Every structure is written in structure tokens, then in C-alpha cells.
Image (cartoon, rainbow, N blue to C red; front, side):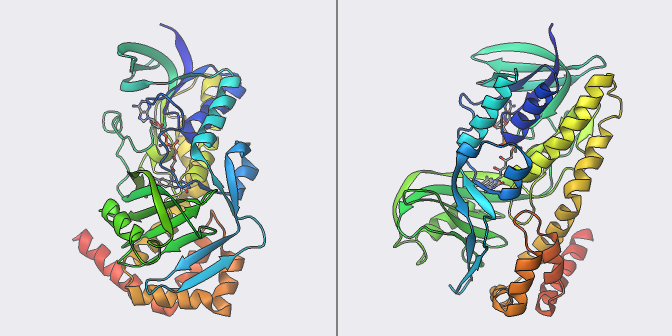
Length: 392
Ligand SMILES: Cc1cc2nc3c(=O)[nH]c(=O)nc-3n(C[C@H](O)[C@H](O)[C@H](O)COP(=O)(O)OP(=O)(O)OC[C@H]3O[C@@H](n4cnc5c(N)ncnc54)[C@H](O)[C@@H]3O)c2cc1C
């Protein structure tokens, strides 16, 4: 049986980027993707920070528009506009984005097997064997290392001794056609999206992506959101069906074992505050490429992937921890407290904090400042009480 240097399971952005970069370093590998078309179906809202495009050579052809502002809508319907002078983020077409990475990986020599679902993985001393189901046939393939970049499919975690992430957002999104979709809008409040937020992401030609994230029943909240006063007059047509999908918002406890690593959503490497996973996933992919290359070059696989876990936690671990604390507190806020938070951001002091400490991808510094604001302490107290109750 042919022995590949690497096999990546999952043709999403993290898997494709990793395969592309490993091939650039001279390793021979394969990506297996269960769907027939890369990037389809699309679930993502496609908001990706400018930093991602500056740091990685990403497919710019996927950019649909620039994002320079966001409108925050409070539970009572007040609107607060936060603008930047430069582009903070881009709104992208995730299908084109993934397909761009696929093209880059293929041009570098990576083989991509579409319509091929990985059914089983067995880790041995010489390598990792995987069983694929492809066009009605089963086949076994062998590789020196395997990257599990299967998104929110955790089918192999337990078998390989990993625990899946412990916390998820339940999300539901749909494309709509309508009027007045100019800026990204974020809606807060118990009626619209308890514990999280709803969004409107304008694309082009009057089309917007409208979605809700909550802890449960996101489909019901999305229906209600579409018929709310904020949207019902503006939405002229709902395009296609509502798509529901979980997003992991806590990282796995351990992301490696000999010859295998977990990456991206499969490892819970996602911004806890917003559920955005493309940039953090790519940062972790970058760490994975360094560690995998070294292991493949030296042919050493025993315990060597510990370095991967250390590297990615160094990059995003602090943000994930602060984000988790803030999310717990935010989940305990009453609507009036959310109103007060928005009041605070509207003041000169709040505005100064957001413009000096805020960043599209790094929220930790700003969140730590928010935690100093006394009216959030009630929420913090309730979060702590809930936490202690869970411990009992
Ligand atoms: C509604 C919604 C909105 C979002 N909006 C944003 C946003 O605006 N910005 C942002 O940064 N992030 C956003 N995200 C999160 C983002 O989509 C993910 O973090 C990102 O796609 C993770 O990339 P990945 O490569 O880890 O996994 P995925 O993109 O999920 O790719 C995994 C791939 O693995 C394949 N696969 C799974 N199991 C198998 C198997 N057994 N065999 C073969 N193939 C398999 C899947 O088909 C899939 O193609 C959003 C998510 C949702 C649900």
C-alpha cells in the first residue's frame, strides 16, 4: 500500500491550508472531503478580519466587500454605530475562499479526493491507516501522519482518545434579498438571541446573510428575527433554506497523539465571543505545519506533537480563556444591563476604549477593560454563582 507523508481529513479552510503548506515544503499528501464540491454547502457568514489576509496568502478573489463599521442594536431597538477609518474586516464568499485554497493546494501537488468520506482511522506503529468510502467503494489508505480537520464532525474523537469540545453555539442562517442592507448589524437581547447575538451581514446586490446564534432553538429564533420590526419591512425574499449548524466555543482538552492532530473546529479553535473560526483555525494550521514538517523530516512521531498544542495555545489560549469568562458573564446579563453596556460604549470613555483596545480578532484587551465597569459586576456575580452551583 502506498504510504503518503500526510492525509488531511476535511477539505475546509484549515485542512486545505495545512495541505497546501506541507506540499510547499516538499511533502506528499492527500486531502479527503466528503462533499462533491469544495466550499459547498456554505454555512459561514464570511466575516474575516483584515489581519488574516495580511498574514496568510489567502484567496482575495473571494472578497465581496470591505467592512468598516458595525451597527449594534440594543434589546430596546437603539442603534449604536461603531466605525473605523480603515477596513477592519472583509466580507467574503466562503465557497470561493475554500475553492481558492483548494486551487493553491492542487497546484502545489496535493491530491484532493472529493465525494470521499473517511469512515475509520487506525493508528499503528508504522503509520495511520484510514478507510474511505468513495463513489460507493471502500478503500484503505496509509499515511505517516493524519490531520483531522473535519469541522464539527467529532466521529473519530472518542475512538482516538480525544474528548470533543464541551460547549457549542447553535446557529441558523439564511440568505435574504431586500433593501437597506448597507452595514453589518448585530442584535442583542433575550428576545432576539438569548446568551448570544443575531446578525445581518450585507453582501452585494441587496443580498444579506441573516443569522442567529443561541444555545438552543436557533431555527425558531431566526424565524422570529426575520419577522421582527427590524427586518420584516426590509426582507423582500428569503433565498434558499435556513441552514442550522453548531459552532464549538471551547477548545478540546488535548489536540494531539502520536501521528494524529486535531485542527480548526475539530479542535474547538474558535473565537469564543463571536464563533468566528477561520482566522484562529489558520493560526493553528500554521503551528501545525511547522510541527508536522519537523516530525516528517526527522521521522520522529513519539510525543513530538506536544509542541503543536503548546504553540497554538500560546497564540490563542489567552484569548479563548478571557472570551470564555466574558461569555459566561454576558450570558447572565439582563436586557437592562445590556442596554447599560451599550450606553457605556456610547460615552466618550467607552468610545475611547473601543477604539484603542478593540480589535476585530483580538477581544481580550477590551473585554478585560469592560470587566472593570461596575455595572457588569452583578452579571459576574451571577455567573460565579452559577459556576459554583455547577461544581456541586
Ligand atoms: C452560521 C455560521 C456562521 C459563521 N460565520 C463565521 C464568520 O463570519 N467568520 C469566521 O471566521 N467564521 C465563521 N464561522 C465559523 C467557520 O465557518 C468555521 O470556524 C470554519 O469553517 C472552520 O474551518 P474548518 O476547516 O475547521 O472546518 P470546516 O470548514 O467545517 O471544514 C470541515 C470539512 O470536513 C469535511 N468532513 C467532515 N467529516 C468528514 C469525513 N469523515 N470525511 C471527509 N470529509 C469530512 C466537511 O464536509 C467539511 O468540508 C461560522 C460558522 C457558522 C456555522
